[in-house]
Length: 165
Image 1 (cartoon, rainbow, N blue to C red):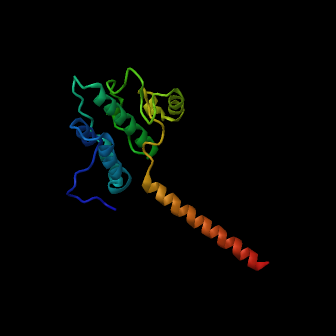
Image 2: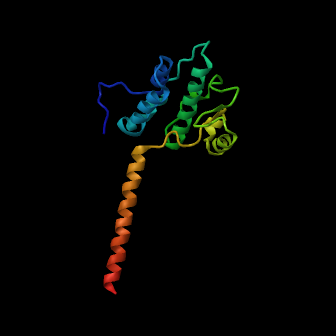
């Protein structure tokens, strides 16, 4: 489903700006994901090209999201074979202390799971969030349809073989 031409792209720079203006982070990131995975997938490079604006006195709560976005861009670019922009390697986009992000992330068992499942672009920046934050519902629906088709084909082949005996 192509995006309407009059709608602005939900770039990561726009996403971060919205978070800085008080938008719930996963609402803004969800809008980005809709463009990345569906509406503007043919324009992915544009979605990540513009660097984030980082104020000199950025509070830790917003810096965490800036660093999360940089890690996200690096990970998504690698996973979907999109050229990764240089801005993600800005030395300011690093956390000094670990940020454990997830349900019950303050528990040692959860932290151990997050450490073992978080992709490297995040852990290198001291973020531990697991590997499910960018599960793609569009790809999942496609995989589910293909799996159903394979099961149907396998069942039909098995049925045809039974009748041939």
